[in-house]
Amino acid sequence: MPTTHERSLQGWIKACWLGYFLLFSAFLVTGLLARLFWPASWPSMSDFWSIDPAALPNSIDQVLYRRIYRINLGYHLVHLAGFGGLLGALQASTLGRSRRVWAGLSALAFASLLLLEAIRPGLVAGGHPAPVEPILIAAGGGSLAGLLQWAYLRREGIAVGRWLGRWIAGLVAGVIAAAALLTVLGPLLRPVVRAVFPNDEIFVFVGQVIFFTVYGSVVGLVAGWISRGAARELASTDGAF
Image 1 (spheres, one colour):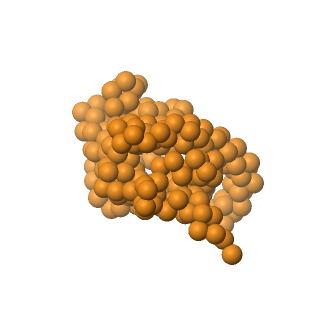
Image 2 (image 1 turned 60 degrees about the horizontal axis):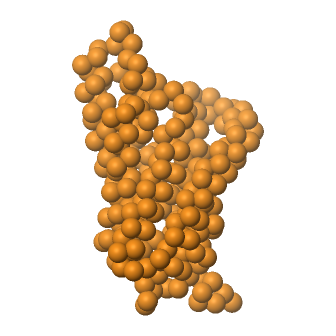
Image 3 (image 1 turned 30 degrees about the vertical axis):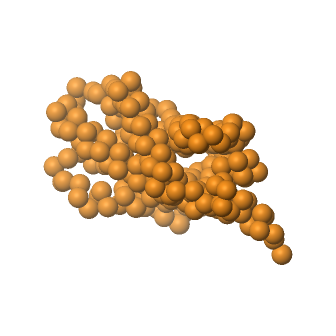
């Protein structure tokens, strides 16, 4: 039977896994909801996501596109803040710390990623020709959340440098592991999914389900597992560890 300490470590891993799983898989749900309210007069969602906002072609309505882009920024702001905060709340419940503070710092960190849109549109909100959005959200948002939480705990006189290093290393390792797994699964699953779902729209959606669930799960699990031991530094005096 697992000891209390072992259950606490497992709780940290589960919190990281569930938080990242929900953060990425929820893009599927919110994407489906967005389709319900997507005006017929707008370009299709697939056409919109295929356009690089930093290099708009003259063939599209520039004013309309920028309006949709601003709405998309608002959507990402709500999504990243909400599910980033949920990740922090799940972690705080394991650590025995204030969910309000921990979730607030995490929400702020993930929402702050959108500041990168001022440097290069599409980096976080989608449309960039390279797949940088999931990397920045997973590793960038999580690392920034860790930095804010580290600064907060430092003010309380708690040294958590070892955890911060392992947490960031875990996020990077998680992104690499997820990318490697998806690279292997892609060629194996693509013909099977195409045979089962010949409709192009359904085929694309199923591909998104596989990508988001695998990516979020692997990143969360790997980051939680690598940082699990050092997470004891974060716990309150009456917390789980």
